Length: 434
Image (cartoon, rainbow, N blue to C red; front, side):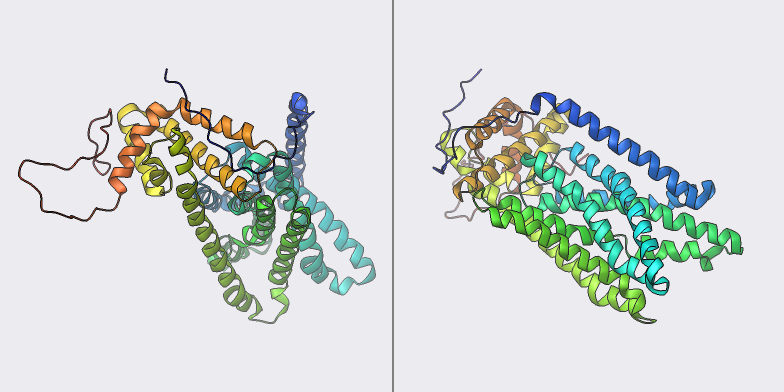
C-alpha cells in the first residue's frame, strides 16, 4: 500500500487550546435510547389523539391523502443537500420530530391556549389562536429539532443549506401529521352532511393544503433554518452573532406563519391575495437563495481543494470534477457501470468527504475553524486516501468528459494525436448508452 502524503499546512488560524473530549460520548447510547423513546411515545400519543378526533375511517383517508406530497418534498430537500449530503439519520430524526413531538406539542398547547383565551373573549378566541398562538407554538416546536441537531450534530451542520434542509424536512413531518388531522376531520364532516365528490369539504381541504400550499410549513420554518445556518458559519468568538441569528430567523418564521394564518380575516379574496402576492414571491426568492448558495458551495470546493493537490492527497483533475454536480454524477455512473454498486457508493462517499474537507479548509482560512480542525482534517484525508483507487479513475474520467474543449492553437500534424490525460483502469464508457 502506498504511503500517504504529508499533511498540508493548515491555514494558520489559532486553534483555541487543547482539544476537549465530550464527556458524554461514552454514554451516547443513553441519549439515543431516551430520544427514540420520546419520539415513539409522542408518535403513539399523537396517533391516538388524531384518531380520536377523526375516527378510524377519517384517519385512514387523511393518512392516504396526506402522504402524497411527502416523497416530493423530501426529494427536493435531499436534492438541495447533494453537494455535502448529511446522514440519513439526521433527516429521519427531523421528520420524526416534526411528525410526532412537534405535532403533539402543538395540539396540546394550541388547545389549552385557545380554551384559556375563550374564557375571557369567546368571540375572538379562534382568531387569536390561529394568528398568534399557533405560529408561536408550532414554529418553536419545529425549531427545537433544528436546535438539537445544531448542538449535538455540529459536524453535519456547517452552513445555510444544512439549516434549510433540516428545517424543511422537520416542517414536512409536521405538515404531514397536521394534514391527516385536517383531511380526516373534513372527511368526517362530509360523512355527516352526505357530501361527496369535487364539492366536498375533503376535496376543498385537499386542494388548498396539498395542491396549492404543500410548501407552506417548510417555507415558514426555513427562515429558522437559515438563522441557524448563518450562525453555523460564524467563528466561535462571534458569540453575539451565533446567539442572535437563530432567534431572528425564528421570529421571521412566526411572522410569516401568522400572516398566512390571518389571510382568512382579510376579506373574501384575502387568502388569494396573500398567496399570490406574498407566499409565491417568498417561495421564489428562497428558491433562488438556496440554489445560489448551492452554486457558491460548489465554487468553494473548486477553490479550496487545490491545496491538497499540491500536497499530493488528490489528483489535479479532482477539484474541477468535485465542483460540478454533472461530473460527480458521471463519476458515480462510471464506477457503478464497471465495478458495481459498491464502487458507486465508494465514489459517492469520496465526493462527500472531499466536500467536507473543502468546507473545513474554507472555514479555517476565514478564521472560523473549531478547535478540532487538525483532527477533523486528518480524519477526512484518511477517508479519501482509503477510497482513492476506486474514486480517482472515475473522477478523472468525469473531469475529461465535462471539461470545456480546448482551443486549437496549431493545425494537427499527420500521424500525431493529442494526449487525453492518464489512462483509467476501466474500458471506455458512454454514460448515455445502456
